Image (cartoon, rainbow, N blue to C red; front, side, top):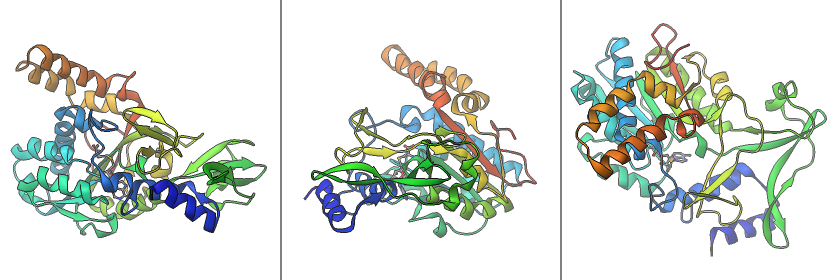
Length: 352
Ligand code: SAH
């Protein structure tokens, strides 16, 4: 039985499901889920992320975290956490780049929040010299000072979609039509979580809510407000507006309902919603990835690495620098948000 059949059977028995339930099942079903069953990254896979494009991304993130740690008095026992580490490349680059920062690695306990058993195995191999521990959610991150990074993690969290009608909302759901999965709208009802969106929307507008994302930020914010920092990198914008649910397979967009479990499903991150949940931690401005990396010195780092490269390797390196930073590529679509204690300096590369 395919995951599509599983979903059709469930909907036939129980009625339409929310997009959040559809996403969770498609991505993390125990035996058929997209992340549960595979390593989706790289040219052979479905998509490529910033740490897989160039080591420079993880190196600069690592030095940013280490400088923030130094700025806050270099606590001798802290958690270095990553949400959704994929292949473990970002964390490996962070650990290599920070090896020269006195005391940083010796003080760090590496904790990885990862739901996929298949990817946990890949991460264990990649990070075997650093004795990481794995947890299922941020609730299980140990207490104390916390430096945390998440790249392309929040976009994988399940969203719900609502279409405005008068002063109420209809939820967009996944149902059945002639035995096929199809989108439909639930009956009209009020939505307390969307009251503030009555101000900036009109009839027919679609907005998205990602309850797990705000719950997650609410959970880590008090810990970071004491001592630590979070760097959240993802595609998205200030304030959700419109349908951003997308499926990608083999580096090309595809129909989100066509083959659940075999395509990546994401939605743009609503950074305003994350900021609204960030108190008591302070937050930085939402900053384009290209600007952030340039401020951290990616061009100087690229020039140093280029000295050792020739021919096709040099061409790839120059293309990677451009891909990470250029406004027409990932530089503008991807944004960075920092959380930090209000009594401390913001992490380097970001401003308030
Ligand atoms: N950060 C990596 C991978 C991004 S893909 C990179 O930049 O390359 C998303 C990652 O989040 C995968 O590792 C996936 O298994 C994990 N993930 C998705 N949903 C999750 C959830 N609800 N809880 C924990 N991990 C999750």
